[in-house]
Amino acid sequence: MASTPDLNGVIEQLLYQQSGYWLAAGGATLLIYDWLLCLDREVKYVWKARWSFGKVWFITHRYAMMALVIGIVYGMVEPV
Picture 1 (spheres, rainbow, N blue to C red):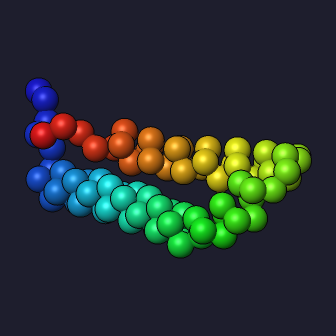
Picture 2 (cartoon, rainbow, N blue to C red):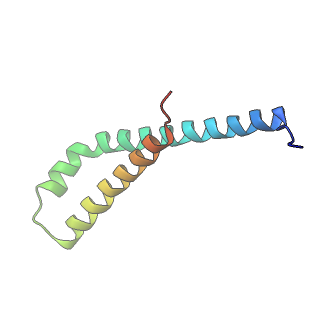
């Protein structure tokens, strides 16, 4: 005989899942907010500087992380 899932357990799992969605969205929001706050200095000190290992490293890691976080949040959102 198949057992029925515990309703309280299902509700608790859904709440944890929803909390994860909100935390991921909040993290992505803070990342974008930080990027917008620093954009003028980034253009001034990074984009206008000559190409070097440090510049390539900074740009690669900054935008790879942003793409990763946005991709994770986008992947977590299920169509309604």
